[in-house]
Length: 143
Image (cartoon, rainbow, N blue to C red; front, side, top):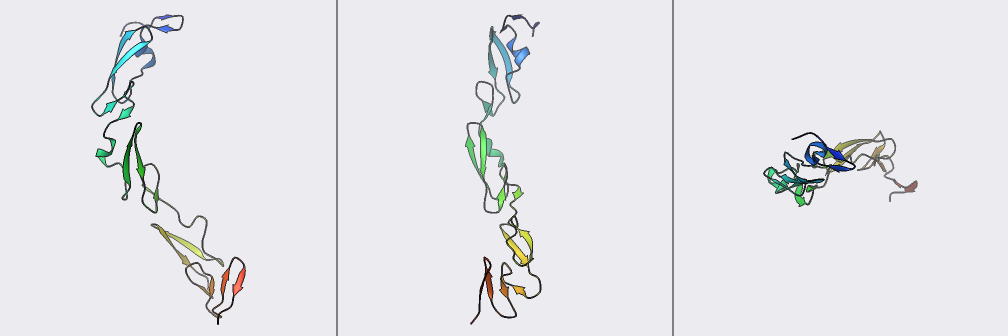
């Protein structure tokens, strides 16, 4: 690369000044403000910005499905998982589904309520003494 020459807003050494080639691509100046990238294996695009066959490395965790896109890939996560590579456990305890002061234990694609004394059921809505069920502030009496 020669010295950077700038005539007004025209760059004669575009590669040295702007470094437009990504992902290990090699830049060649082809004229004022013009360049061409030779992309490393597995990449394409004007600036080597697109990963080809990005799903071959199985980037999605926990059963997520990989979908190739023009920018690389996207992961379609299975139930209970999120994030760019499906590696984040979704917190089913947020917001807390447990009633009457029950504490929530987050599981993979599930949760478990630990109910205070007198309350039972999946979300601590059943009064085990009377059998009554509470739902949205209403009490439904058993039997």
